[in-house]
Image 1 (tube, helix red, strand yellow):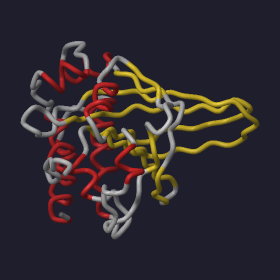
Image 2: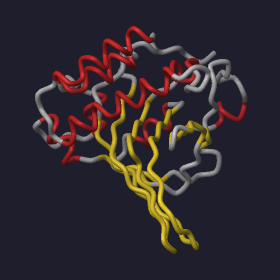
Image 3: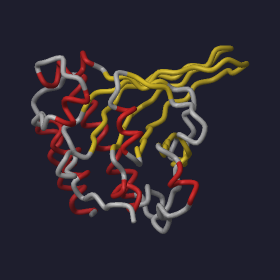
Image 4: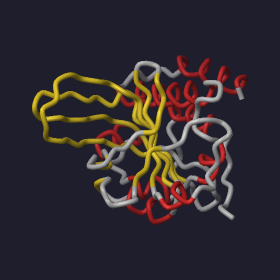
Length: 223
């Protein structure tokens, strides 16, 4: 796995296009590879292999002064009809909370969508993470598995990495929406994320490093 990560990351700088979207795809690949390469600190492999979709948001920004706020842009990939990872669709994460808060934080966020119902919500134009039991902080560590009742009930598992600390995260109240303008920049058309995932849209060359990493986690049906 470490050899694969090294080869994939080595290929990232050769992409000629330096648009914001391409840079963000590189960052998403780097975030995922670094998290999964951390000894005993990554997302359990069993969970990724059972997931229907993954969302990676590098550098989700949080700031607060009386009103809290969070904002980030990233990508999703879902299992296609053949169970292979799809070309990436662009997403925005937006949300807020009210309370006396001062300070700011930037973190990398990863979401795993664990069932088809959650995938259908993710592929809608937008939805809000907030239903009871819908989202749970994901477990950390190679020895953890997807077998506990709590994790199997949650449609979405979430993690964050900030200041070198990687842990489960609750994103209750955050809104995920598809980003048609970023999709247009990557694909030349204002494609919806559902079309990218379900219609076999070829991925842009800039997405290959990320998809190469994801292919190391083939789909495993829940038993």
